[in-house]
Image (cartoon, rainbow, N blue to C red):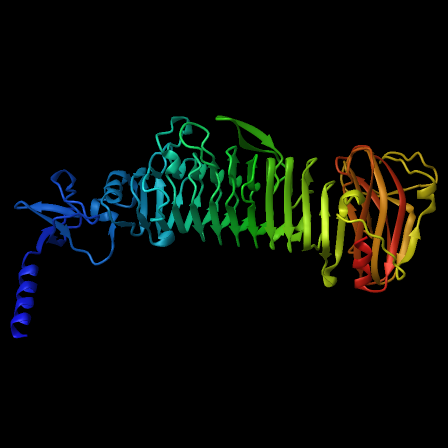
Amino acid sequence: MKILILLLLTLFIFGNSQVIQVKDKFSGSMIDYKPVTKYSDGSLIVDKNIDNVIYIKKNQIFYQRVFTETKVSVKWFGAKGDGENDDSEAVQKALDCGFAVYFPPGIYKINTIIKKHIVIEGSGINTILKPFNPAKAIFLYRTKQPFWSYANEISNLLFESSERKGIAVAFGNVNFQEKQKEDEYASNVTFYNVNFKNFDKAVFFPFGNIGNNFYNCSFQNNSYGVYALNNKVSGDIMHAGNKYFYGCEFSSNNVGVFVHNSAIGFGGISFNDVIFQFNEIHVYIYSDNTYTPVQFVNCWDEKSASNKKVLIDEYLGAKQNIKSVIPFGFYFEGKNSIYNFFGGRINNLKINGENITVNAYSSKVESSSGMDAKDSEISENSYFNIINSASEQGIQIDKNIHVKNKLYFPDTSLNMNIASINHRTFLSDEKTYKFENAKVLQNLKNFEENTFTGSLDSFTNKKLKPNIEFEFDSKQQYMRIEESILQIPKGYYMINFDLKLNKGQLIFLVWDRNKNQLMSLKPILDGAFHNYTGIVNINSTTEIFIDISSNDGRKVDFELKNYKILQTKTYKDLISLFEQ
């Protein structure tokens, strides 16, 4: 036993005696180095790969820098982090050394290439990475084999540019027409707690580059937060999917997430507990197929889609063009695709394509002026299915909407517009209802017997004499139809009628020009009758009436018939009546 202890002690002293100290040329500190024969990956050390930072050679012996952490600092390689100098060369050496890389607090202006699987970490918002040359990406991934290796991480960093220029992280050549071999396999990176601000494209996937995850990341004020294409040029087929987002935020971007896919096998995109707010378009996806549906789980949708048109990219094969579109929060184009929303809220939806289905399960679905949401639009041969969902402010969609099971409304804040709900598409199953508790308060016979046609300037039907109550501005007026005035007590009400808009941008309201509003809608302009329904909880006796206006101050021409206001005794009866 004494001999063994003595031998171990001798080996310890002899081993430590081989550690040498070398003065660091950047910090001036004395750094310990230990003798080694292999790199961290197990390969033999050779002279040409000595970097004189992590590995040095003295008296024909190779040494490795002694450090207790598993990562190296970019400042060991000479990075200044002062926000002025080009730190690209120093950071590139750190990225190539074979260890995890750490960025201490500072502002680093760099353009680098990542050639191997690596872990990169900063110190939160105190570590800022900016492009030294905005024409190049800050990090350009060129990692190849082994494919499908999730050993790449980026965490706790702030990527920041200015004037929406440049790219933070690109997976392959930023000019996809100059693709290099196997660029489609640059992928498999997980981002944790990373912020991206003021870029043209914050994260760019030009060749499919599948298999990437984002946790608690923020994308703010970019032209495109995440931009993903399938591989449209040479190499292996690679779709644009397999991108996963958890607890992220997309705010004040032109487009939060842009996906254009024309490759088979598309899918595997999911948004989980993601906040979308103040973007012109939260998510734009074009795809002509779905292998697995795109999923939105418990996502927040607020204040998207201004009234101004925005410019977005479009592709015909590998040819890129720019088109001008009216923005919507969720904008889906293409064909044969499925999108599922579970929980969360949907304020603003555009479906422009063939055989595109959007399903909302237990979601909050509405067109709310408080959320700056415009009316949703659905193209022919596509559908919006609402299953066991809820609403407070109502839905304005002109066609191809299906409500299955129930649509729930909170009794305490009931002020509902279910506008543009067509009887032909509202329910998927034919049913017969009897409502013994519903009382018809008003059924305007002159509306039924005499078709009402009019404009803001004159009305051809002499039985109806609306008065101009006041001018909102030089273009907009409100005109009340006096024959529709009705005093109603506190209670639950539903209004229902058929209306055909022949000309103009009609705004149709049933209200008291104060706090009680049964209906506010913009009818469909297609020269056909549609049935419209609104429900409301009136808390005190009030006088309501039909008001009409024009969105653009020009003439409107419409026909109204079967106008009814019904009262029910209970909230339950009202919902049952509405589900008819």
